[in-house]
Image (tube, rainbow, N blue to C red):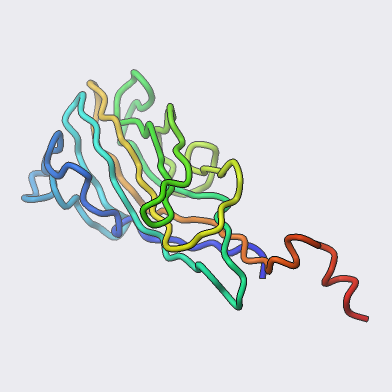
Length: 185
């Protein structure tokens, strides 16, 4: 079976942890401070300068497939932090933390991040989060993203998608990787 990647589109991002606190309506569209602005490419929120908020998304999770328990190896968040200059201290919001969850249990926190720029169309070290050890999943994977809205520039965060990579190799193949190759004649 091997590796299996599951994705959720950015429109699936839930309202922020503290709806409307430190957020503005996007393009003057009512209620987008709470719900975000949904469009074909994802979901957008606009923050007040100097505020921060957490955004959440659940990932379809193959907890068990053909008797093999899934182990989570990596998580992904595709995002864009606005137009023009972006980066710590230059303007535009910054992704500062990403938490990866299995149900109500946090698996790992990635802190002190400096995620910025347009990270919607490819994977790199700014939007790929490698777990320090693969973790067997019991329930469902959730990803939480903390966004710090800076004091200068366009303060829009756009989420295009989020995903997770699972190792679905049966336990016997994890313990004895060459077993299958030599067991058949």
